[in-house]
Length: 201
Image (cartoon, rainbow, N blue to C red; front, side):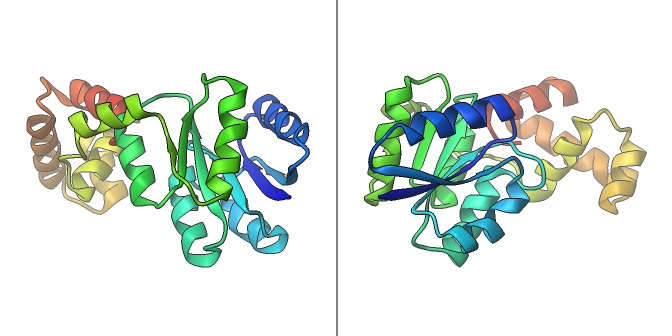
């Protein structure tokens, strides 16, 4: 029996995933969670074979959860679900040692097959997405440039970003300028759009 933990913040989707997987004779859903920061403790208690993780969750994102699961519960393999096929997210998922990466608009049978294959230790990734990810490459941004660009996405001023990240406004402007240049953007809004579409934020 394959024991599965599901972490998805949208209740209807989480319930549908649980119902779908529970129809299978060889799969048992042992936990359903709405927050990423609940996964590790619950996984340590329920010992799932596979953790089906939404990439965007409150408390902790699915990629961070996958990395922590690998360290604390290495027998549990992560399968990441995402609503967007952003190539940067795939690269980040692989760096977090996730075994699977499935876009939510795939047929339901793809998830069931993916859970079985991930439980066997196989990798389950859409070949087309791999090709796009390789073409896009990893993020050209440094971690600090990423932090600043992510903070800028909220619409905060340079001074507010600096205050939140303990940087001077001049340093924030330098990081923003570097990020804009690196991603080939026209301005900060364009840089945020490019980085978000690539899955770098």
